[in-house]
Image (tube, rainbow, N blue to C red; front, side, top):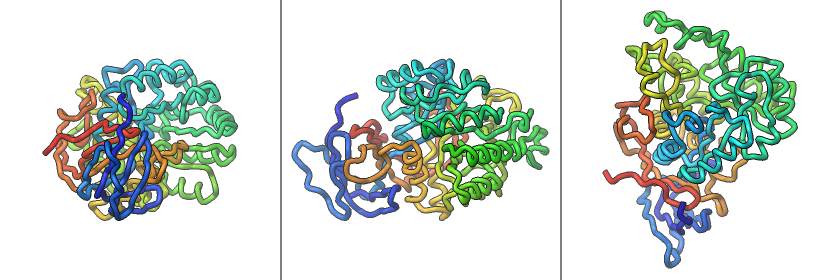
Length: 433
């Protein structure tokens, strides 16, 4: 990458998700960090500094996505660090935590070193590796947390697999507690899921498809919360999707358990009816639930029970999606459309912009102990310029991901990222018009 360029962004609507403050103002960026902020005024622009007139557009920290599959190593036909980071930049995401369920999985410090070097050469946003919770993702033996943390891992997960064995999870939590490491589990019990392919209920019955009960999520979540309470470990439920799960998390937090949770943008903005006539692009894990459960997720996010929103970016090869619904692979694109899809909740009056942006940037950054996602002097210059009301129609052919399996294809959304800045460098600018 080129060296960061000194920038002055003037006449912006500043939104700081860390403090909730918003108002007109300007920012000066120097040496990859925020050098000064002037609320309600424009700073004096030194000579040689590039000037960007925001013309009232939203200027806010870039998003931090805790869950995305980036393909490398071993699945470059689905996504690469290059294409995935380009999609992220177009969607306003400046930091990605990549899933560890690659081939080979990220269970060795040498693989983390490989990813860091590849990201430095190919990615245009920050890429942080999450490491495998168990060796080979097999759920039997925990990985070397200390060595993986030293190599650069920011959390531990088995990706799209929930850790089934309670004794292994208990051992992992005790071990993680010694390092204050974060465990992020995919809360879905494979035995309870069985052969299910979509949310269990009347809609699945009418479609003739086997259902996935809510208990596949809540039973594993309740087990994990009890273990987190007993061990004192930091635990994050990667994605919840139903009201009962939100209630379990709420009670655990009230009891002082060190627990946080996320929700997929799919669970916030889509429901089981979007499957329609067996649309495989809407086959995801956790499955799209009923409208009542979707609204419960929106309410839990607004209340603060749900801490973070993730893209659950999971690109799939066309051949794995061009199958009968029951046989198609789980997964959908999400990183490029996450922000504009999430803005539907602001437009519907279900939350306000600073609170939504906190779940997309400030809270996940705090969870990882990053110094980003805040508008204050000295913070990293990872920012986005957003036209929050600009309408567009999603065209999967124009998406920057290598795969094209977007559940929002042909959807009408509002909110276009006009520019993305990472470390003081403008890495993305929207095409005019």
